[in-house]
Each structure stands twice: as structure tokens, then as C-alpha cells.
Image (cartoon, rainbow, N blue to C red):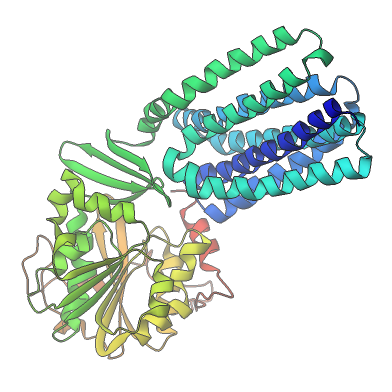
Length: 515
């Protein structure tokens, strides 16, 4: 092999590594898009990875027909990957904003399969070209595949630690599309003598490049205009953290926070939710001093806790530092939480709740679980018997635990399964629910080692909604929200949710699919 052929073969190996990096980034990017827009991250990542790999298989099969003009075909495939993949995030937001009936899911899966198919065509072409240059087939295959697999690791790391947290899903897609286009231009230039009409092919690439560069600088703004249609009220803040998309909206004094599209609170009625969440366990536990809150990074639950002078310490554990930073800096959130997270009694820990409770040696008089609903595997573990057992083991002898437990109306089976799961740890439980206009009827589970006497619970601090007299009435459930009665007239026996049998996720999906 002469020096020129050796140089060209080296370029082919580098190209295979770079396109692999781009391919894996697009693969996980599509999973992240599906998780944010369609929900259930595990399901979306599973489907997108499966479709992408299936597409690669189909593409590899189709590549058998590509035996001539290998470089031209490779450049054209790279153009297609750059164009389709680069615009994928932006167009996904557009389809979601202006369509209905599952069109967004169909579009995402179609794009995933198509980009996977194009990626599957690329590598066999590069292997054949390396073979043409004089590299033995077994060596060309091994070297191209090594570059491909090594590039896959690099791509995954880049997406997790750089692209998504720094650029978000829209700009990241355009940047990766530009890299694909750069590979195409490099190969086009080095192999220009083997290509018919290289200038025309380059001109097509320049047009695609202009679109991608526009997207890098202005795509986020365009996606923002689409995203506004996904929310009822005008968006006043949006950002992509390392863990989720955070959106704040405001209309006529009503401030709302959304995480990955799910409503977290509305300022018009959040007091109803947080007063039940906080004041019932505080009433049950005698002289509570040390409090643990899991979730609640907006600071609203802490605001309610700080009404008690007896409290010595409040530990708030929230995974996403951007949520707590926003709660400490955003004018609208500060107005709501009254700067609660800045209080000297409050310690904020940015860690997974399960990991924290496994590692801490501290005991708490009151534990409040203000975590998102169990709509994926990572959240499901925070609604298992194992997790509640850990919480019980860090609860003082006469302490109390309160768990937000979704809606007993919209997700009856989920609510009562959570209750049964907590009770399976040996704790005594009492059920409460309240109407929250922005959420609907919402449920809570109060737990303690001692029997809970609802008639003895009382409100001892200033509130906007909750009173001592109304507390017993919050324990009564209507027929359509109580434990389901089977056809034989017997009350359904709910199975506790566990790490080994995480059936709560399926119950949750079934319950909320029509809402």
C-alpha cells in the first residue's frame, strides 16, 4: 500500500469513529426527546434504541447493493443524516405543538428508524472502501468496527456530560448534524478525484450546512415558539438541566412550574397541597425538631415548615441543583417560597433520595416525601417497600411520615397500591385527599409507628386553607375513589410495590393514559 492509500485509509477509520459518535448521540438524543415529550423514560429509551438498532440492521442489509461510487454514496448518506438528525429535535417540537392523536410518537419513531438505517449503511461502505485501498478485508472490517465501537462510548459520554446540559436537545442536534456534514466535506475533498461533479455535490452540502448553522444559532428560539403552544400560559423561563427540562409560565398572576412537561404546582392553589403535605405530619409528631424533605426543591414545603419555631433543622434532598438554584434566584419563585431555602435552619443536599437515605445515619421526627409520580423506573424505586422501609428506619419512635401519592380519582389503583406498600413496612397509615383545582383531587398517605388518631390532629400555625375542624372530613373517600370493589363485592387486595416486582409503573400508565 502506497503512502496516499495509507493516508486515505486512515481518514476512513477516523470517519467511521466520528460518524459512530454522531450516531450514538442521535440515538440517546431521540430517547431523551421521547422521555420529555411522550413521558415514561424507560419505555421511550427502550423503543428508540430498539428502533435505531433495527434500522441499522436494515441499513446494513441495503448496503449490499452499494458497490459502485462508494465515496459519493457515503457523502450522500452523511448529508441525509446531518439534515434529518440535525432538524429532528426542532421538528419534533413542531409536530408535538401542532398535531394530535399520537402523531408526535409516530414521527419520533420514524426519524429514529430512518437515522438508524442511514447509520447502518455508512459502515459497510467504509469497510468496502478500505478494502479497495488495499487493506485486507479482515483488517478493514476489524479496524472500522473498532473505530465504530470506541466512538459509541465517546458519543454517549459527550451527550450526558456536555451536549445536553450545556446546549439542550435542539442545539445539540444541530451541532451533531454539523459534525456529520464536516465528515462528509472532509471525505469529499480528499477523494474528490474519484467523484463525478464534486463541485455540485459540495454545493448541495453547503445548502444543508447553511440550514444547520442557522439551527445552531436560532433553532432554540424557533423551538421555544413551538413549545409555547404546549402550555396554557405564556412561558417566562425555560432551561434544560442535566436531569430535566424546567419551564415556568405565568398568566394573570398564576405562576406554574413544569418539569419535563409535568405540572409541579400552580401558585393559585399550591397552598392547599403544601398545607396538607406539611401540617398533618407536624401535628401528629410531638415537638418535631429535625425534618427531612425528599423533593420539594421549589422551597414551598420548606416555607410551611418554617412556621414552626420548634424546628431545629430541615434537610431538603433534591436531585437537580438547577431547581433549587432557580428557587433561590427567580423573582416569581422567591415571592412564593419567601426565600425559605436561604434560611439558616435549611440544609440542601443534591443527591438521589434513595442513595441519600441509604447512606445517612440521621434520624428525623418528620419525613415528607414530595417526589414526582412513579411514571418511570428511576422514580418507581422511590415508591417501593424497600424505600419506605429505609424511611421507617430513619424515623424516630413517635415520628410521622407523609407521602404525596397521586390522585385517588384518576389513578385509584395507584393510590391504594402506594398505601398498601407503606403499610407493608409495618407502619400504621391514614389516608387523606383534597381538591386542588390545578391538579384535581389529590391523595396523601400519613404513616407512623403509632396509630393515627385523625380527631386529635390540629392546625397550630397560620394557614390559608387547612383548619383543624376539616381534617377528619379529608379522610372520607367517595365510591369512585375508594379501594375498588370486585364483582363479588369484596374489596380488592393490593400488592405492595417492590424493586423485584415494580408493577406500580404499569398501573400508573394504565390509569393516566386517558388524561
